[in-house]
Image (cartoon, rainbow, N blue to C red; front, side):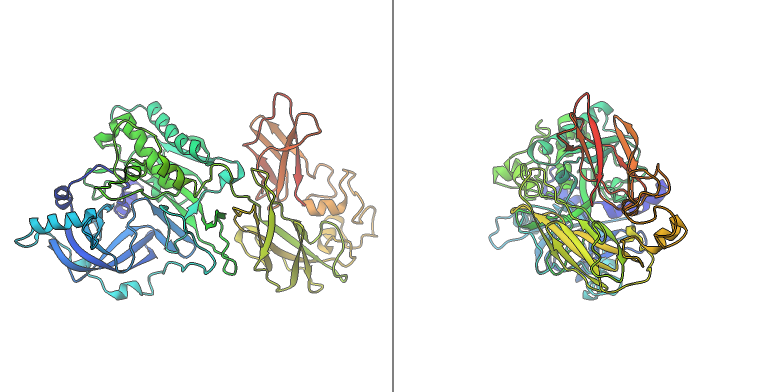
Amino acid sequence: MVFSFCFVAPFGARPSSFLPATTDRHLQISSAVFRGAVVGSQAYESPADGLIYTRTVVRVDEVFKGNLPTLVQLVHRGGTVGTRGELDGSTPQFTPGDERLFFVTRRADGTLFATRGHDSVLELTSSGLASGDTALQQLRDLTAGGPLAGSDVTDQSASTKDLTSAAISKSPAPSAAAGSSATNLIVGGDNIPARFLLPDRGDSIPYLIDADYLPAGITQTQAVTAVQNALAAWANATSVRFRFAGIQSFGAAAALITTADGAIRIQLHDYYHYLSAGSTGDVLGDGGHAWTVSTLTNSGWTTGGNVAGNDFHKVTRGYVILQNTNVALQTLSTLTEVLCHEIGHVIGLGHSSVNVGETNPILKQAIMYYLVHADGRGATLNSFDTNVCRQVHPAYNTPPYCDDRCLDIVTTSVRPLNVAGVNSAQVRGYDLQNNNLTIATNSATANNGRFSLATSNITYVPSGFYADSGRLDPAAGSYYDVIYARYSDGTNASPYMKVRVLSYNADSYNEGIPDSWRLSYFGNINPSTGLKHHAADDADSDRYSNLQEFLLGSNPTNATSNLRFTSIAPSLIQWQAKGYEVYELRYSTNFTNWAIATSPITPTNSIGKATCFTNGGPRQFFRVNRVP
């Protein structure tokens, strides 16, 4: 297992935090150095490991070290392909036509990458004031007699066909109605950044720490405290919150763990050689995140919501990796500073500047400056850091949120079927600031019926009396018909949610209960056959009508099968549930005033479970409601 990860790790040589390096040092540690112009970039999914990479074709205009072809290709981890995206704070961002000074290094497989991330693709300007312009003149002076000896990288020759090959998946084009004008954020191929959603719901982002190896002289207690201090700096400045989920051996480089569980994996070492493959010793750490891409075409709505007019994708996981063998991290304050910087990348921030000669003190003194300060500051943010982060996670007014709903449609000879709770779902909007919210819908299909909205209730009227269709798997995302909705507080908007039709079920008696359901539990479809088989009856005398039992997904012939608590403990509450329904857990100390104990919960099976909920005091009561 270890050897397989070491084999693919060279593609991950994308450090974010660096020690300073002179032009001479940069020249020394690179396989080849040249001036060139970007022809184009294309993201693709590797068939070998399923990970995303970006290939960039560059025209070589002036060589300072090594032997290069006319067109050369560079490969970096990350990019946007289909519905997946991943980037970190150091991945070079290229625009066709960019003229840059390139310092590149070979990997073990021969491919080339920017030696120190975007610190190695220096911008060139006509003014001659950029750091790349200064380095360019230095290189010309050093190589007045011809290019220096370096690697022969002509085998990495490229063609414009490399940008159009059928084997390469193009990054998605931005929706005409979606976009972002936010600045200094990590963005994918559609120029839309991504964000964690749990803080909008009042929930915390879980983080795990792999402390198998640490910088020399640093104890595990000190390292964990450094992580906590780094996280606290961002939490104190914004609405983002974090929750410690434990110490864990990851068994692989954190960046290569593709579990989309919304957690941040903080690896305090580089045992798996993700950073050190091709490293020069200047690398201190790397941080980034992955996201899902799903933009509603007609409206431009995104799964990460909208903050002050800027659209976002949804982050699915984050990661930090540190180079524990670097002597700089043996100083606790520097370790804390690097952690804080990399966590900034995890929650969406790019660098304040990649100019080694940066003259703007706000940019240079930011925790997100690309070079480590190593001046004892630890986890200290400045105005740049907080202002940029608040574009993603506002300090006060967080976006609202709502939850997906599923419908199992009952079809009868009567249309519309006027039975409360049947063929409808309430789409409730929530907001931590209790703002006035408005709901909007979009992109409804009408394959077998039509949706309508009244206040927050979405009702579906089937276009006919259909036989049983069978139920689609709610986890698969499929539907017969669908409508999208989201809430707005006037400044921010929630991610879009979906109301999906999963099945059609025949009801011959117009009571709102499918024939197949009656047959399964009562042995016949006629409610007049047998006792208490009508919708309003209570067959098992548990105080839930047969219709309520159908809606709750419970057994009408078993008095213990209904919406009720099955386990109550200080840190865990469980109840009988129906998968993919939405439940609210509320608490009270006096049976009069009830408050939400945690954000709404959508179980995926018959067990509803809450583990993180508000403790209202030494004596408190709970109740659970299914959202109708």
